[in-house]
Every structure is written in C-alpha cells, then in structure tokens.
Image 1: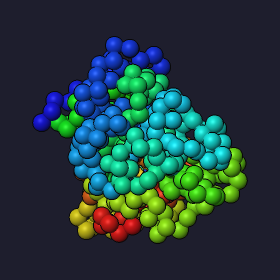
Image 2: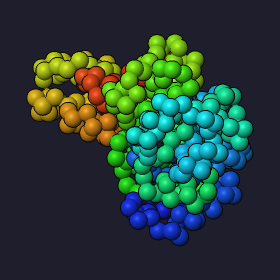
Image 3: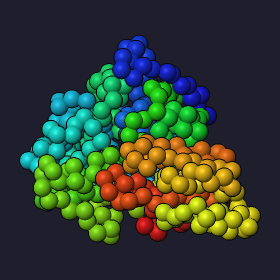
Image 4: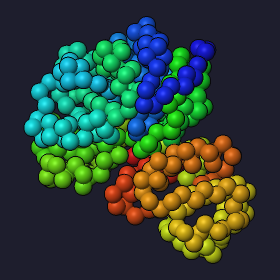
Length: 341
Ligand code: AMP
Ligand code: MG
C-alpha cells in the first residue's frame, strides 16, 4: 500500500513548489492524479513504460485499452505525433487547449504499451492551468486516463479519486471540481473524412462546423478502431435504469415497483414538475441544461452509490448538443454485463 496524499493547489495560479514536487513524483516513475477541465486524470510519464504499466495496474484497466497522452507545447506534440492531416490541424487550432482528443500516427518514441499495440496515438492539450503546469514541469507528455477504477464513473473531484485509488497512487492534486465533468471527444484524423470514436465535451456539430463531414461510425466499426469503447464504463455499483421523461405519478409508480422488490431507489431527474416527488429518499434534481447535466452526472451517480442505492432511475435527456454525450454515458452505465458492447 502506498500512502496517498492530497495536495490542494490553486487552479489559476498553481504554486510552483507544489507543481515541482508533483513533477518529481512523475520523474521517479510514480503516479499523480491531476485536475483537467474534463475529469481528473491519472498521470504518469508517457515516455516511461514502467510508469505507464503502473497506471494500467492501479486502475485495473485492460492492457488493450489505449491511453490519451496529454501535452502542453508544440515541441512535445512533435515528439509524439507524426505528420497530422490538414483537417486534424484545423481542429487542433480551433479546440486546443480543450476537450478534443486527436488520434494521429505515432512516432517511435511512443511505446505500444501506451497505445495498446496500435500504430496510432491519442493526444490532447488540456485546458487547465494545473495540468499544463505539471506537464511543462515534467517536460514531456503525460498519460492521463480518468483517475478512477476501471468501469466506475469518472472522477470530477479529488475526493472521487481518493475513493477509488487510495493506497494505489502517491499524490492527488486538488484544484476543485472539473468544469466540464465528462471526458474529451475522440476524433480519428488518420482517416478522411475523420471519424468520431467517442463523443465527449465537444459535440459532433462543433467538429463539423470546422471540418465539414465527419463519420460517426457504426458501433462495431468504432469498437475495432477504439478498443476502450468495448469495455463497461461509467457505472456506479447500483443498477442504472433509464426512464423516459415522465410525469410525477408515473415516476411514483416506478419507484414503488422497485421498492417492492426490496431495493433502495435513487433518482436523477431534470424535468421541472418531477422536482416535487418526495417518495424517494435519494433524489437528485439536476437542471435540464445539458452543460449542467454533464457537469454533475458522475458526481450524482457516485453520491447515490454512497447512499447505498440499489437502483438508480435516470431520466433520459434529448440527444441534442451535449445531451448526445450524456446519453452515450448513461447507456454505457446502464449495461449490466462487462463486455456486451
Ligand atoms: P479514457 O482515457 O479512459 O478516457 O479513454 C481513452 C479513449 O481513447 C478510449 O475510448 C480509447 O479507446 C481511445 N483511444 C486511445 N488511444 C487510441 C488510439 N490510438 N486509437 C483509437 N482510440 C484510442
Ligand atoms: Mg476512463
């Protein structure tokens, strides 16, 4: 067991001494969880294969699920990525730093351990002063999968990281809750038209507004191209059940039904008129604005888990804008078996 320390750090003006200490842990091959604008990442020196292996181990992540390498400068990007296509560059210029991950051809400096054996590598420049300072202090790219145990909802606070990884990593940098609350959008720009492999903080419309047509890809094709999407993800311990938008009476009936089977029932809803339902002990009412929903979804799932809900009823959202990403995560959270994607 490693002792896990939490170090609070100012989001806008991170203390250079704290960043230097965290970078030292990375230089020694240790693991540091760090804040990004999407979710908290589990950092290791991307060019140190042993350190990267430790990340797979700490998370319980299957070794064929490749990792995103986070970088902070063009010089670092050049170390990781071979030539990037014109459309890739247009996306990079528009959305970096930000919740965009590009899949590009890798250089020989990037190990197959990072890429799960693929000839491509996923890269992203995060939009968070602490993440950027940490990468800068290390001087090269950092792998940064979400800092949770594999299959669990991604962490959006330092406490979520501690819940999952206490005793497995050395340090957690705590800069408060993540702004976006949901992972990056992954776009493969080695093909034309580029293909969205995973929806995230950027919507398909935002990507298309810059480069025109993109492929969203059929599920089976996407699975082949992006191994990580095959696994169970984003799930609390409780069973997640998606429900259509419904009125108060219908929700009461559903809650009673699950209760009669002996379940503690939690709810995450966002329709205004449902806010007054009181029969559930565990009731989270989120604003219907999809940005807010994205920001608080994982937090809500984790909190209802902590309250020992057996079943969590989640009201579906319209698949528009970030709503499409939220529904993607909810469907994955609602799957009951590990490998049925
Ligand atoms: P995570 O870091 O857990 O948020 O997930 C990273 C996502 O990026 C997973 O869905 C991976 O399958 C995907 N990914 C990472 N590297 C590659 C790559 N080289 N090619 C395709 N997908 C990738
Ligand atoms: Mg993850």
